[in-house]
Length: 96
Length: 488
Image 1: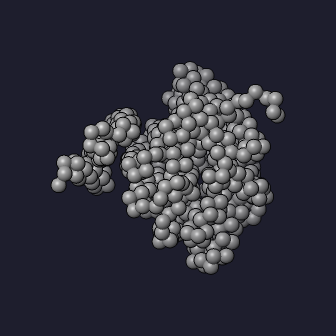
Image 2 (image 1 turned 180 degrees about the vertical axis):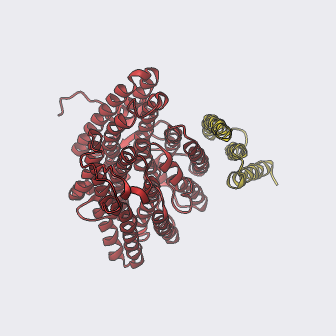
Image 3 (image 1 turned 90 degrees about the horizontal axis):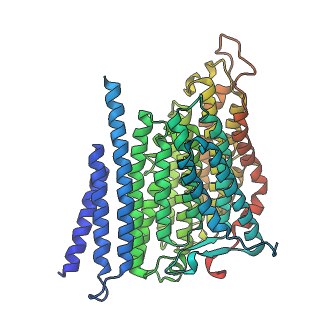
């Protein structure tokens, strides 16, 4: 088994764990983390796959895609965390 | 016309709302005025683009003169321009409705401050997505739309709205991730991301898998059964103008991208097309049953969106794989019909809730305030959603059934008929409440509950009804620049 194959399968495994978590988890924070894991796994797979054709040079375009994905994911995570905090505040205010 | 300086309308259509969003964010006191100006001028640019497309066919802009595989091209053909015009038209009237819904005495300062920047950002994303010609650009636009749409969902700051918005956010992120993975694998397979490259591609199993990932993401974002779980909560708990935008325009983007993808990379298998139709049929049945059970007016309208999305997928699958060359037009016509009618219906539902004070369907016939004009608007848009002539919804359903009949796919006709009956049933629950007066002990205030704010949804509902008469020119317009290969 080549190293590329091992890396690729690792990425796929991380993606699947994240996907499973995102679908099954109930706790809001855990679901955000699961989605993060999902995106890390997906990005990992693409970065590994970019090395595929001639082994010396990597194709820069998938790297650019992954960087954009990371930037988008950061802002999406920030929004999700802000929403979770807001929801937490609202729920605790109404309990009192 | 030829002497006019050559203005690059597609670029303006994307960047004008973006500028407006930034200005409205920086000057919150003038947000409403700035927002309205930005929406109107964007609509004017779209109108100019429509004329240009009518005169000379598809319009292509190479941003920065880089040109396709590397650079970003904007391309306005018939279908794109039609959806841009739909967005502009619905946008103007929802903006007018928002002026009333977010008036100082109805909404708090925060809601008023953030609505306009978010809506203009949403408009930027929508216009950008309709003009994109490569799948990575589409991904970026999907994210712009998703973030703005979540913001609009939670605008009221109420607990149910935030909870629904969070659920929407999860679905959105997951859908976008699946789409991005698909985009990455398409690149690894083909080495390019533009539509022209997709057309030229040889069919291969790896490519099919990549496209399947993208389609799975899009189905999650367009809330096709059984991936609709986030939609009713998000659309029912947002404020009325936001619901109108979410239901009328936002779900249409992923449907549009789905149509585009299948135009350029035909689904490899008859089975897949049938699967889309079957999921659509399940959405019609399940959404119809849930709409019959809904206790709140806005929740009923939100479930009706699930039904209509199912109907659009049935229209897509109406004549199997061979019929796809024509079927996308039926789907596009239904997309247009639903956008106009559903925006009108959500605005009218919001008006009814504002005037009556609640939106419990069971108690509508006990209210002594009858917002007659809003109720009339609700009924008119229900006519288009049910699909009675001469509405646009009727034209769309007619095309669906005509194509299914010609291809001998009778089961799609049966599904459409059952869906129509169900929609008559659940809308009748509401309309009966409007028309019953015998449960009241106090006299009805005859002229209560009218307002200038009823004008915007009423005009939208009337155009949903009237545009059905213009279905033939609309269909002809849609075909300009199709298929992709014939014009640059």
